[in-house]
Length: 254
Image (cartoon, rainbow, N blue to C red; front, side, top):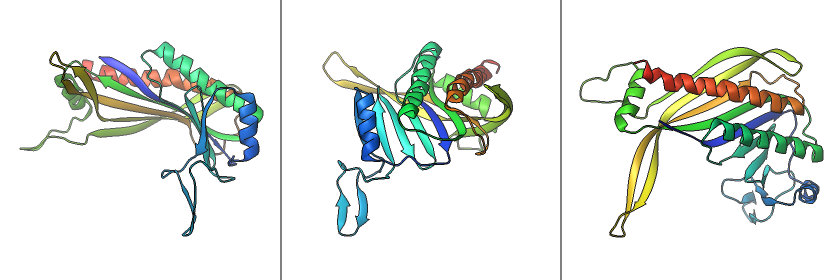
């Protein structure tokens, strides 16, 4: 079975909102020499101010939700939270830990330039693609997870399972913190493109499972230091691997 991480996200929740300002942009540009992009967080890449006025996507309104992209890591400043996201494909646990440390260290560097303030909640959320050699293995895995038999002349579609198991963890000076361990398992497909001998492109769809994890501190009343984010996320990474292995090993026991 092939495992690949296609997304890693570190999220911190705060009591404040770091909206865009020209000063923030100037300070970040003066401290980072490899900024790929800075922009407004808006789905249609334009802000409607009134029926007569639309701001260009190249303009970022003051105090708007915004992002900065550094080292191919996207940092999104949203109301009451900051997302640090990597879409780099990861093939091993060692690479996962290395990339995770890059996410948390970038956050710490930004905090030295723009004060983030009190952190009320922390989360680490990686997404895995699990790919088997054949569709039978995928079907077996789903049967091991969803043990409800199909009714006549039908089969399960749009399969998804989500569950949470809470535990208590210690990290840094914080003791007996309630931590959510959320697992979401869903169907997925990967398209493999290959050139045939006659010059045509052959698109092969490969069935896979998507396992999305979200390990986070429960509630929004914490008061965590910026240094605690790195410690918690490394602990969460270990918890996440344990959860992933429990999903993978389930089918082997059938």
